[in-house]
Image 1 (cartoon, rainbow, N blue to C red):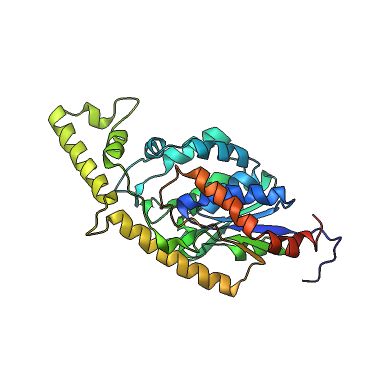
Image 2: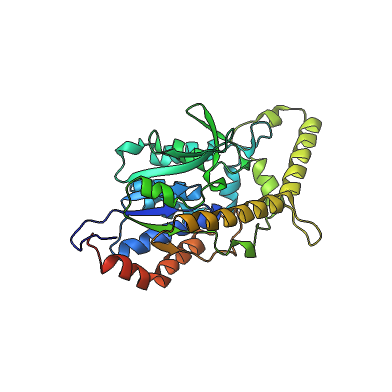
Length: 319
């Protein structure tokens, strides 16, 4: 690059996929700000799109506060289960809550350039969403196959962008970034896969409701049988033992393997100027109640790369 010192560099940040590990993006963005670096171009994939949307719409502090208070009980409360709509969890409870809490601005109205990556289910094409309602784009990008149902966007069924571009450096550049900071959450993820959860707690929370549900209106014997089958399903999904992996283990490990290989391939072909790699292999796919751990490691990853960041950006360009 031949930028002059007095040029205003367009800095982009590519926030990668990684489910619960994605809370690390909050710490990364905060630590960069403390160094005087505030990217004005944000490209996100999956959880990276979720955190990136909060940052681009000036609500990162709100997201941090909420993430740190999340409990496993509250996470289970967002599970709107269905086996007939393309995913175990529909995702509508979560995104309705987010829209009520944060609004849903148009992407073109927010303070920073923002784009999310999704995958078209029918063709496997990479889809860049750079307009429309902010959280519609996020909803499309986070549709983890088998777990969260696909999202219909402009007459296309879209699923998780991590299937095709887990760390969207290419989208950052396409939106005008001169230099890209990439946050890769997949660097050491093969060391651990899923979380062992308290199955009784899950079953209890799934059966709770503020108002009478369909199940509660059924006769008691039938209700008990349906509840029993539902609890068996959840137990089989998450249960772990030393002999055989659970369904969730298999799904999580498969996604981890795929994203690790795709990330290596994509970033070899489109190398970012700076790569930040939070070390979060100890966190499972669904451990969203461990935000403080992830956020602090996000900060630490910036600290480890401070010399490279200073050499690449602070000493050579003005902001």
